[in-house]
Amino acid sequence: MGKEGFLSPKAIGNRIKAKGLQKLRWYCQMCQKQCRDENGFKCHCMSESHQRQLLLASEDPNKIMDNFSQEFKNDFIELIKRRFGTKRVQNNIVYNEYINDREHVHMNSTQWETLTEFTKWLGKEGFCKVDETPKGWYIQYIDRDPETIRRQEELERKKKQDLDDQERSAKFIEEQVRRGQGGREPEEAPVFTELKRESEEEKSMFLIFFYSVALGPSALKAAGSGKRKDAPSTSEAKEEKKKSALDEIMEMEEQKKRSVRVDHWLHPGIVIKVVTKRLGEKYHKKKGVIKEVQDKYTAVVKMIDSGDKLKLDQSHLETVIPAPGKRVLVLNGVYRDTEALLDSIDERKFSATLTLDSGRMKGRRVDGIAYEDFSKIAGSIMTSVT
Image (cartoon, rainbow, N blue to C red; front, side, top):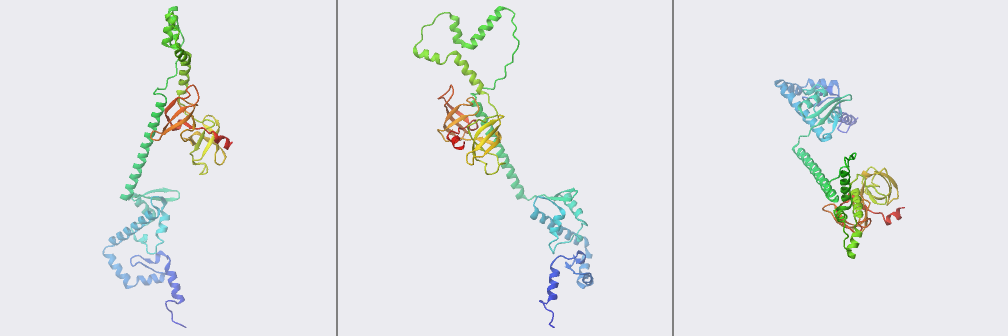
């Protein structure tokens, strides 16, 4: 029978047993030695090296405990910082990962008797945020690293700058809307009161005033003079015929009606783009044609690529700006529901120049129409997706 050596079965078994974690009651923190059974621990306590360590510890026991406590605290916080960061986690999960290291400092050699006591101490000293729940104590590391604080301040500064940019963009759009309305303030609704007349003279004054408002000062002057004017020339007659008092009134009423902006812009037959991500990447940033408008704010959209029909809210859509020379439809503002040709685009002001192609103002060139106030007319696309 051969002698027992390094590669003998007994020696290999001993090394396997000594590799993993063993019982804490047979571990000596002073000597940092782990014993496998009670007899081995008893022999170690009677050894000369252990007695020497006890003598050294008896000279200043508080210092030894403080060193162990400091080392335990540093290793525990380093594990939280490296493994979990600033996430909220249960203290038992962190402790179980900490004791997986065979050479860790045991808690029974520190100033804290239990993990709960140590968790409360971390919260009291400001190392972590701690809170108690029915499932146990939870901790969250507070990162006070200067580099981390600088990075957070940089992110907050960038977020604030983005908000300022959005406010400037909103003010710019509001300015464009005001220009589109011709600088006019929204008119208040008229208040109707009962008409009371005390004499016939007051009645005739009211009729004259109404006549002047309806026909204009020039017409009133001509009516009050009672004299027949000379026959106008052919060009003047055409101009008067083109812009008679009745036509001016109708034109003013039409402009007044269209100058009121509305909060809904959906219109059948225009091309739109889907901007919501809730439908997935298949439809995000894809174009479609509005087939039907329901309740002013909901549209039935037929996608150009796939031919699928979707029912989408107005907030999930945006207008499509075509290339110059293409036909568009004005969706809001003074010239709402008017078809036009796109002449040019001003990317700096987020607006475009249109030439009206329908209505009483056909051929008129209009500047400063905001992007969201017009969209491409489907045209040939309508036939391809129908």
